[in-house]
Image 1 (cartoon, rainbow, N blue to C red):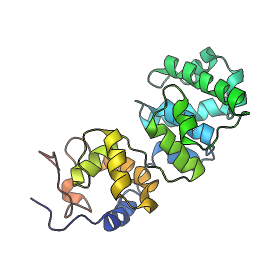
Image 2 (cartoon, rainbow, N blue to C red):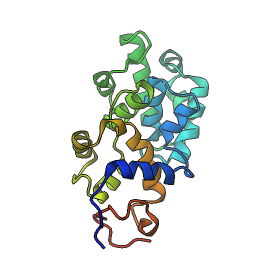
Image 3 (cartoon, helix red, strand yellow):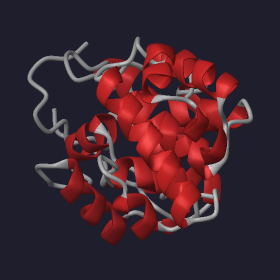
Length: 222
């Protein structure tokens, strides 16, 4: 059934804020609330989370940070020691080398402090817009949109944007989404996409924005 109303992003954000409250927070935001809110910690935690469930990446990141929370401290660990601490996450051996190398670069090139600078973060091998934008948004309060699979799927399903890749979704949202929501959109749509607007059989019958949603690509739903 087509929606009855034009999509109102302000109303959608207000409704989704309420409906996601019972669910676990998106991983990077949960870590920030637990005190792991530096740009370095946010970037490293996001690297750990790539292709890894939040339920795994959250305790893994906290275990690593129990041993090293700064680039200088991380640099003192060997890649093998980092690997042992993060071994539950996907591609742990590759990520261990990456994390150690990033820590070394920050110590050598930036006096041990990761600057809140997009170009610097994207200069690190393996760091893309998703993690750079999350770290800058959460740790530095800079207006960047971080698009993961949930943000990409949900905003396209709504019909709010029409894109084929997360990278293109960033560009489309930057042109359309009110700036006040740029950081928050990831915080809201990760739990919304994981628990309600799921990839398969989304819960359309109980969705608070169903009357505005175009349901693009939805063949069956609950």
